[in-house]
Image (cartoon, rainbow, N blue to C red):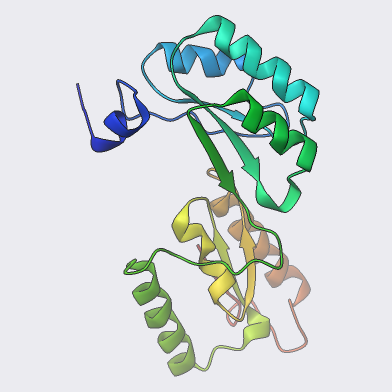
Length: 190
């Protein structure tokens, strides 16, 4: 069995966290099942109103006495929903995807900053045209990469980056991405 400091911090048996996907992808029964199995079940609250969050949190509590989390997307958090989550007093309130007016940052000392600097330097050395360069990222901290680049970018979700990058490359080769673009000039990086 693997035990990490996060287990002690959250009061869970295994360092496993159910991703709190909103829009109905996570349901209270799944959250309770993960928590009962020793992980941290997370309910995605995107698209749920305050009453639904109260009902879901009650259903989770009826199915488990283990810790669980409620997850919000910051760009679309409504006061009544957030108030319901606070009332529910889950072990964890988590957040993702900031609003457009929020600065996006990595943790201090993160190696991702060095990667961005190296890529920026390389693109400058290559003379890469911003209108012909696209970055496609997945999910997690490194997925913030397109936000730091003054190029076109797509921030996709779990496992979708290769498909999106392939689509961008194919579209660019078929349509001539911009007046000066060609398949050989368009860089699709994922």
